[in-house]
Image (cartoon, rainbow, N blue to C red; front, side):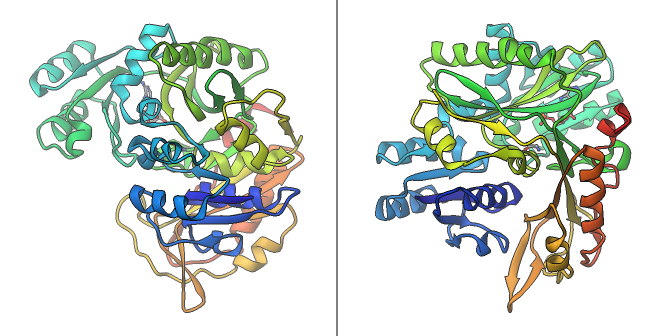
Length: 427
Ligand code: AMP
Ligand code: GLY
């Protein structure tokens, strides 16, 4: 099958890698891809946001499926554009993508459908917002409504931080129109988990659970990032919780979307906070595969990926066979020092081949590029060093052995990926 994957991060490398292991050989293209996808696919120099260019390529090349990785092109209507040309596309149209693109849309929909979430209020005026924050008291969370490259959420321990976050969005307009409206949310306590569900418009199939590590440093310290590592399964998502997530969260949201005339096809990603009583609340929805959750989930998928993605895109997951390997998976992100702030690019990476040869290890590239035949750093999150193991403990040990073989200038990574799960269990 001819497949076009949109995006160039670790998630897209993982998608290309899994598709390249299907029982049928595919003709895979990535736009723009990275140095890792270049080994499995043809990289096409089109930016993920270049909708007109991607649509023209797809009309000419007639792929059997376009799989959209990042949220920006989905929110900008790439899936609608491709569908109008009769191209099968994995990912929702712009109307459904609002679940990620507008935190106000998402909060209102959850409220209408009775989905458990943090209490929140919307503001456009800084003085009114500050007054509300003072009434609520710290800690609280300030969120820009729209897409803000992962920087739009501030968890505020103090009212001082809250005031600064409110002013940054509403007065300084640091996020442009994406921060013209903000939400002030109650602070939720608990442990986070990511549940990704395939949605075919009518039904949902939840993928294996996972947990991301959003903060830059060990012990959940430091600034929020795109995600410093992930593992699957996440034991915080117990067997008892599993059906509740579908019944209390995915099903009502899907009904709510349908009531608005929105047909949602693709991944619906629920970022959950699970409290000490085991009750889930939604922190956010994303309209796409998670990054780095995908790198920890796909190695556990037993069987072919293409038929699942294609069935979902066609709106019929009936009879889709989704099985999971019993092994656990851990993905440790190696980032450029300084990320999520300023960092250097173009630093040579060594040890990749040795690390990739280790049993059960796969290295997913994120911010890498080929320069004069050498692989160099080209982004904040550089690599996702991933390992399968009989237990999470084995998988983590193997992943960290591989990490230790890889070198680049100022490399940074967390030492405690999967730590929360390991502290729960003896094995
Ligand atoms: P979001 O992009 O909405 O998932 O927010 C990014 C991160 O901020 C989440 O992964 C949480 O760690 C944190 N966060 C967001 N909303 C809340 C909340 N209401 N209470 C506590 N932490 C939150
Ligand atoms: N790992 C968080 C995200 O994909 O949004």
